[in-house]
Image 1 (cartoon, rainbow, N blue to C red):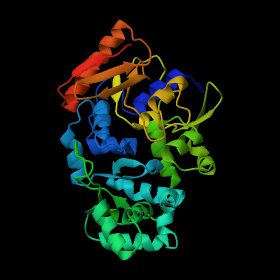
Image 2 (image 1 turned 180 degrees about the vertical axis):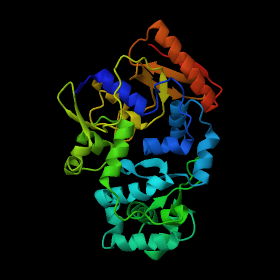
Image 3 (image 1 turned 90 degrees about the vertical axis):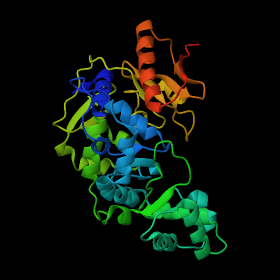
Image 4 (image 1 turned 60 degrees about the vertical axis):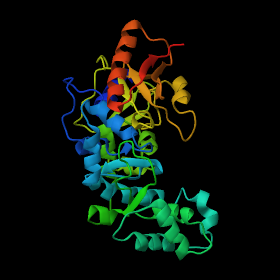
Length: 361
């Protein structure tokens, strides 16, 4: 079956909970929403609050704070080695899988500081220091510096984060909270061991449920893992296979519906780094190629965006004076009115007393 770009767009919005078949918000609690999405970008502390609000239309700040505090949801370095939220249950299989597949990559900036040391020894020292307690990264760095005299402790702390199963419990991740990141051993925080043999089928099935239909390259782009072709091929018999208009093979779960493409999605605002614009190698189902550089101007930045007719139509920002909405192309009067109305709802959720401004210059 050949799927059009609009079919892929509408299906993606529905699986990302940005639309629902009956038009009603998803009623599930915040940890179940996070579970559906597998992992929610959390590089910027407040971003996941906005991302969950825009998907549920009713999430309160305290809902996520409570989920983090009672350990239903955890914050940690996960997909693409970046900060994400995931459920405590999913962390137990997702982190070991990523660790096995990604190895010790990402440590090159700190190589000089641990040259001549065994990173397994650094990891073991970190575990010994953290056992039974949570501490800020600077405190962990200081303790590691004492264990390894002459080395920069903060570099060693990053080695521990890459090498060991660490989560960042509250106050890290709390709405509007800034400051040093707190670290704890995941086994201590979650009260149990990690899975020893996580199955790629779990990863593939969960990814397709929230991001499919998708190619192998899309799965690799989302997860940060490479060389997954053979893993997917091993499960081909369990999957439905589509193609896009360019002939690219797309895999999907056989029991999930695909939208017709003529649905009319509402305007939605997304936070910085939202996975909606990062979860595929071919992102044309959500953003035009000519607009990607405006949203992702560099490796370490993904601007907040808004959707009109299901596609990224511009970016937005908040200063002390205004919530400014900047379309990439001039909006029709009707679309402009819908964007301003949704921006007003976003302003209320952000709890900011500023002017909402549409910049169509």
